[in-house]
Length: 125
Image (cartoon, rainbow, N blue to C red; front, side, top):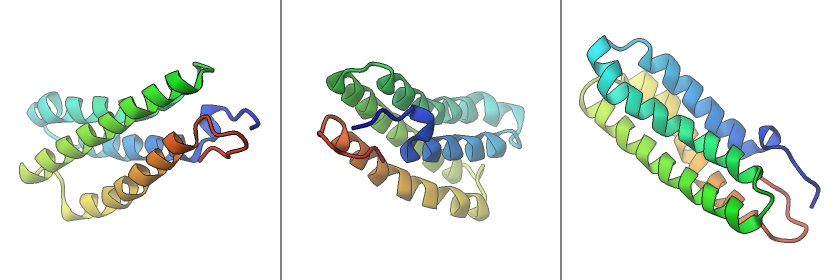
């Protein structure tokens, strides 16, 4: 398998899009919401892409897989904070409609990427 930088990975680009959209939304919140839910949400979403990138730098399939599993945990944490934000009326229906397709695509893409790591001749997602 030819080396692909993390920036070229579809799964990484999806994670970037998710956190960029999330960041834009959180910036609109009042100070209290940003300091409580907002910071946790952005940190969790940032962690998805950061762990994908860190795993790519390990040059060891087992380490890479471990970091992708951590990214998967961060995705679940992001979903938790988004649910809390929606319940607390910090997210509009339109914002949910923007973020939901990203979440729906990122989860299986992350799993497919995890499954592809270490397989000879596989293409990264």
